[in-house]
Length: 56
Image (cartoon, rainbow, N blue to C red):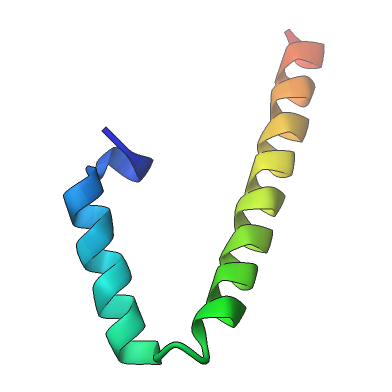
């Protein structure tokens, strides 16, 4: 099982379709934006976990 319950074949198909739609020149920008989003989500999840533990 991979990311969000998707396996490797599904992620490969999604990556291929994304590459066809946006082209190779836009992929670095998309990857950078996705990385920032994941980092922000992880940091918010950590803050949420600490807040929940403090309330318990």
